[in-house]
Length: 100
Image (cartoon, rainbow, N blue to C red; front, side, top):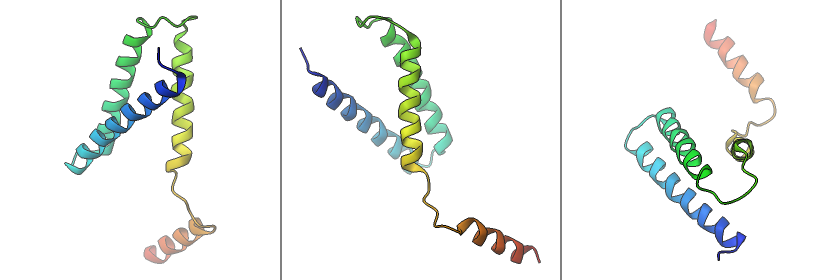
């Protein structure tokens, strides 16, 4: 039987392999939106497949959705561009200069 740490490590390993595939597709010129759509499609498809084959109880599809939302919110904060204070104003001034 695998421990929770081993399961987490396997999950992270699989996630990294999938991200490597996505990066390869990005380098090949595929649009980031198309890659993300494919990843979401695959995640939903396999998650639904796994839901009906899982032996964990209680079974509630909302648990899977909440888990996805938690990961998504985490990675939104990780990948959010870091703007220096006042950068929004700087961009607005540059835009105004270009329009004059």
